[in-house]
Length: 476
Figure 1 (cartoon, helix red, strand yellow):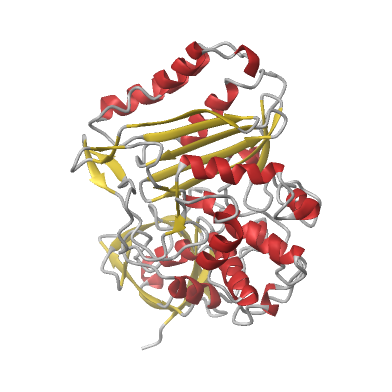
Figure 2 (figure 1 turned 30 degrees about the vertical axis):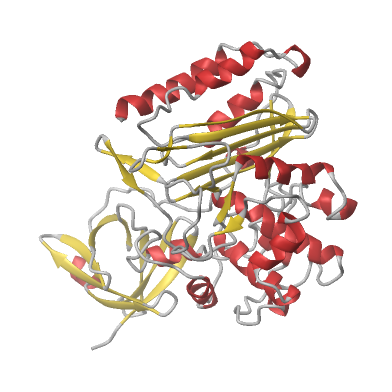
């Protein structure tokens, strides 16, 4: 399996680089054959990928490779359903824009108008801040990782997602001032959409998007136990073999869309039609937002906005469990590229852009903005290492509790090392950085706090997408 993985990435790179940069009218069957060559490493003994390309509304490529199910040797086909990960956000965003078009809300509304359970942070968090990941809301999955139960280790529901968001007494940053990707934003938007429309997300999207656009094979994974005919099973590679890697959660909206390459091509046609959203909101959907200080963040309403070879790129990637996805639109060429995979090691953004480049004349002077390069980037500061006398570790020993993640940590000193245990049953070490700051491997950065007498009273922990989550020392 390892050899196959390496071969795939090498082939993906070299096969595309070997092709000429040809405009559509010069494309030949040989060019499409080269597309086949890119995905040839996905043989009939491994998970794979479905690929579709359309230009000017005409589907010129729609094929699938590898297996949808390894246990029964079921092949992937263009009709196979995959989970689209964060590509799902486009549907939630479009729903909010449609409600704005109908005058049922405005993008400048405070989210607490519709979700009063969310704490008052002093400065309003607007719906547009949620759409653009500039709200400062801490990511629900990152917060649950602090409990010792990260995503994929237990079943998470909509209610559990909303509950931990409502418990947060602070934000990662003042609303509107920075960009930090957080799935909590789209959890709040789902709640707004459902309360304003009176419909569930599934009902709303079926009525206003799936049915009008003839997306007959698209639905939401709102019950992870449901049997879905034609769905590919997701896998990851480990130690030369494949393991199941399914998203066992009912939480949906930020992710959870089950769909096909053909249906996503139909969805991308919304970029060319004003029928559903109208001109104002169809345009708003793909206009990159700015922070309050005027910085362009390269993100719109569920889309990254950048350039590829000098052409405007409107896109989004997706990653949930072992599913991977990429959906891109290049308006100047009316080019759509769709990639859906059931293999965790597949790199959809890299391969998607290389496929798109086959149909876009190269402009060496064009560069992709950093924000568009990875729309899931987040604000996270890592402590620098300083050589100094280590503190008295016994100062930090004790039991700590956080109301915001409802979790208890026990900090112990063992063999000259700080160790942390939590109710999930796992244990990890803290390494000293500087002063009262410590770090861990994959469990965040810790800053302990003291009172006026110098006694440690608690700490704040920061992980990717969730900053300064407070824990308080329990007094016995």
